[in-house]
Length: 172
Image (cartoon, rainbow, N blue to C red; front, side, top):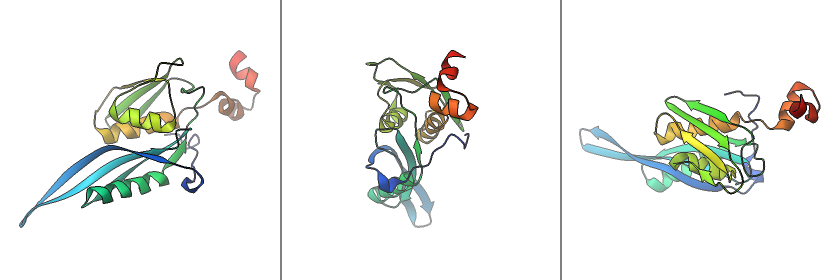
C-alpha cells in the first residue's frame, strides 16, 4: 500500500454510517467446557468518498460490533469518487484476498458481492464493476478492497505529483 496516496480523515468532523460485514463466533475449549466469544468486522463511511474498516472482539455480539465501529473510525481514508464511480481500474491485494475494481457508466450500479459491496457503498461509489479474485474470507476481501481504493488517484493528484498542468495529463 503506497502511503503517499492515503489521506487520513478525522472522524469527529463527519457523519458516518456503519455496516456490519461479518460476525463470527469463536470457541475456546477449556477444562470447564467451551468459552464463546465474537469477532465482528465493520465498515463505516459517509457515502461521499470517506471509508474505513475495523475489527472488534468481545464476549457479547453488541460489544464486538461497538468495538469494531470504534476501530473503523480510527482507520478512515479518503477515496477519489468521480461522477459516482472510480477514476480508473485498480487491483487490490491483502494476504489471499485479491480484488479488481473497474469504473462503470452511470446507471450500472454496484456490481460486487458481499464484503466488497459494503465497502464500495460506504465509500459512496454508485457505479462500479468489481470482482473478488482470490479468497472469499470477508476479512481479506475488505482489506484488499480498501487497498485498491487507497491506491486510486484522480487526475488532479497525478498532475500535482508530476508537477504539470491538468491538461498535460490528458493530452500528453
